[in-house]
Length: 221
Image (cartoon, rainbow, N blue to C red):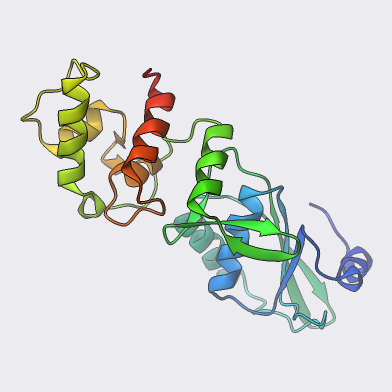
């Protein structure tokens, strides 16, 4: 997104909208808004601008920009378009977030844009969004195997084997091996699908919904 000083000032004058948000500084709400834009229609965040449209500026160093980009990638697995615009001695960072083809979470929760506000998705809304999105279960994140509930994995295997859905997995398989065979562990990294299905603290605690969603993704009927 290319934007000059005059275009930035015009955007600020128009105020916050469904697709534009001002953030004076980095905070939890900054990352939640990125998740919300990615899960809705995309949007832009102006970092260094307060809610009244006053330009406060951010730290004008390349190190700050690099650290910001790395945090966004690590926390949300997204690569937003990041630009800097200097107005006088103050620097504003413009982040362009495209709509994602898969649900994007922050700290295990999913957000969406409602009007000019950011709100946490309800389990029902999340399920509907997942079913209408592109396949996303193969995307890996910064997760640990300690986040997996082994008993939930074992329960899933017992149910699937009983219904003859998992011919290549036996009841005595270790959870790690099960995840690998299901395609939920790639190069020793857990996928989003692994956390949603078998995580100890998933956004949606309904195993039934998770199994149905996973079954659709994997082609089970």
